Amino acid sequence: MVRKLYHGSPNIIEHPKFGYGKSYNDYGLGFYCTDSLEMAKEWGASIDRNGYANCYDLDCAGLEILDLNGPEFCILHWLAVLLENREFDVPSGLALEAKEYIRANFAVDYQNFDAIIGCRADDSYFSFAQDFINGTISYRQLNNAMHLGKLGQQFVLKSERAFERIRFTGYEIAESGTWYTKKMLRDKSALREYFNVERNKRQRGDLYIIQIIDEEMKPGDLRLR
Image (cartoon, rainbow, N blue to C red; front, side):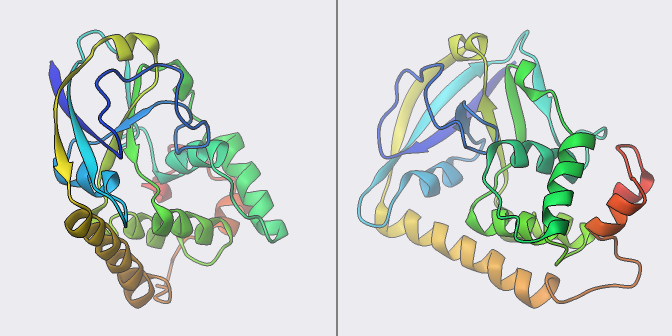
């Protein structure tokens, strides 16, 4: 199976290199792509310069791909990976306890996979996760918030074997005036919906991180579906 992928960047990248990048990205070191050409253009453009949506074909035959959207996972598995790689503020004892509990009980052995599919934590989405571990929003609200603004999924190449299978097929220019503006509007839309619809809209029976910890909820708990 050949999968079409796109990578937004200020540069044209014909040969993605294994071992390069930032270790503190959502899923650690890797090459971050998307199935969406439009999303790649948003990621590639900046406020004062054009960028590129690099286009690739990836031969997935024989690759071990971790899909964090699978039925065996919940949003806390994604959050456990995020907590391992990104820096979270822990301003309270609850936040620290939440961070330790999630990492201890929902850890994913993602480093042994060739590639990962999962949510992308842009600035606003990262703040949603932060609010959850701080006890500000419920589990339901976190799940809903991750779909605001339709940020989509990212596909991350992790192994040397995966890098050997990717082939550059060209690029499209991402004009700053168009695509950076769209990126900012998407982020603002997500934040506006979050504050208007989710952050202050507690529902009876909502599940908060303190309850998840106190009741020692684990993967497979039906309340986490």
